[in-house]
Image (spheres, rainbow over the protein chains, first blue to last red):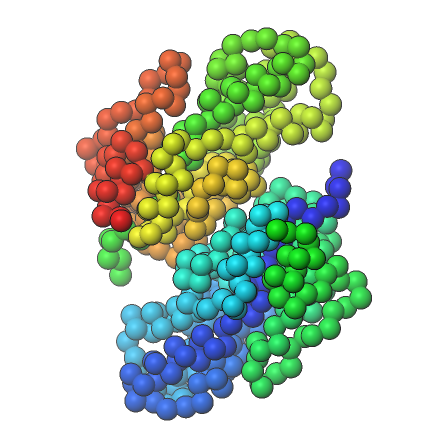
Length: 238
Length: 238
């Protein structure tokens, strides 16, 4: 039934398509200035991000009921604003600042690289970010998705296999007709384990000097590229 | 909490954005020629389409388990090919012809009108068509959606209220911040009943001479336009 031919590329988004750390750091600095708080805003971004994996793990384990990433971000935000000495901030302003994650800049090759890849393949997000977040981000960062798909539609977060297989099913494709593109080896291992193909695109600057990025692929990954244009070249896109 | 301001426009697709009848009739004529069958292909399109409402009604009533529109189309196709005297056709070819519904031409104003509306609003499909069908159609007909959403994600077909409310929730919006754009008054009534806003865009040629289109809005609809450009003008888009 399956040709094994790649028909869709599905993308991890945070870190792979967009530079979350610089974007959050910049917006946090503006927010801090408004409220008279000074801090290391790169570290603030890392501290905010630290709630993300923990929040999703509780959902996948069943300890917490399903909650979208906007909610995970919000709960973590309330903790760290206190730690960083922010004054009380009203609910509407918190909701708005929490949407900083909807306003992340693409890496320099994101829009042009995705546009090339789109000429030959279906391209879709496959992020843990919720649909609203991904839709607003696509508009903000000019990401030309054919479809906006998310772990939200599976009710399980990556690296749970269902997040990958549900996405392929929604696209009407066999698992091995879909390739995950990501900057993170553990995400790509999750895709391979679920039956998808895998392409590592390196993003050496994702974590600044806070953490080492993945720069070497596992041997069973299908492609290894330094950015989306390199991947487009290897996949024979114009 | 809700401003009541319109933030997203969600679109019925079959008949509102794309001209399904002419597109199916043309592809059916090609398919007939290949297999030595002659027929009134407009009528064939209407007969194929006739399975759609009946199939969805069985799902919403609980008589049938959830099935996507591709499957509803396929079951109906097997019945009418027999009625029209087609010879036996192999499974792969049937699957391919069934995807005629993924290859529907937009009305002349579809791409340019949606592009104008996209400059000011989030624009998304809200169709009973499944995600794969809508994604392939967007690529084929150059429909610049911000998000591709479907009743498939609610597990209930329009006019069930959940199809409308689930779409607003996935977009992170209050129901009255979302307006359905459709050529069909009953769909718009479903949206209003679910708490959304409603805009009738007339498509006088949708059914050819087989059936009368809706050309007059209910008094509680919010907008009434003759095409997407007229709607864009009324909504203050560039």
